[in-house]
Length: 428
Image 1 (tube, helix red, strand yellow):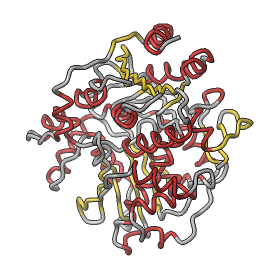
Image 2 (cartoon, rainbow, N blue to C red):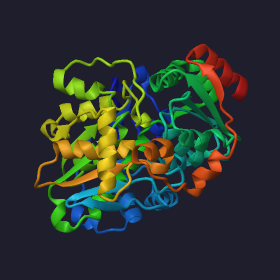
Image 3 (tube, rainbow, N blue to C red):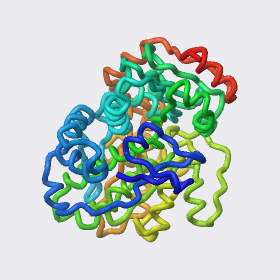
């Protein structure tokens, strides 16, 4: 698999190299040089989830990984389901919260862990990542206790739910957490600065576990095929998928799925009030505002890292611009939609509600709609209970995490401070 740095096209690397590097020169993200269609998609959709996922990843990655090795990696990483639930006629919810940390990022985090374990072959690596909510837990649990791997997680202090936070700040051992006094974009900026620092990169063996990393992105392609495979065959012809979008990695994976043959006719990348992309599509002006805090905090991102990949696919017609929609959903409307979905007999947390609303705004009557539930409602227990005025059951994994003390350290949004903490903690 040949991947190109979108900010520096002269830098071309293999899948293995891209996974190990994480972020390319000039803070560029890697993207496949070409995306070929898969033959006989109908036969692929008839396969079981894990076997199909291996075929998809083999198609994308090529011959860098032996098929039996890839089978083992997928079997280990994707050991939980991704079911669809019919919420109303021709409208389904893809539930991506059945993994160990109850969020969609378990798929990418666990597959990346398999890749790092294989590719690094005992070399020391430090995974540095920023999280707006769910990445931290998925990555922390995927790498927890792994030899020769340290994980450093930055998150905006007080701006993610307590349940999200406790899932990764209570682990200890090789998981190191810093609560940054600032926004997620501040956290992301610190990560990017670290990747530009050759001293830090070389001494700590730095890598990123954000959806910047190509291994996470490709893993996510698989569950879009799983969603369509569960639809009745007559409903597979005109599928419209709505993805709650913050950093735009998830919708990027959906576009890759469509590019290699998944029958998706339309995509909606629906944001909360942090609406940089919807405004950009409407006006042509890229003008990020200050990040606003929202009920859907995992989407509180004003400068999405994956937008260059999405825009590249739109500009090169890998995905048709006319079939790509992006709108924003405000706070009051998010709550109204949560209550509406509840009346349909389904409990949705804020991110899921935003995806549902984007689908309602953009879907045509002849299309089958799929909206994504990217996290379990209990991860946002307080806000969901407040909006719906009903009690939620607490999954055991969350109850156990909430009972443990937070081990995170508080730092300013200052790179010098972060660098000194990293060397102090992990050795200079």
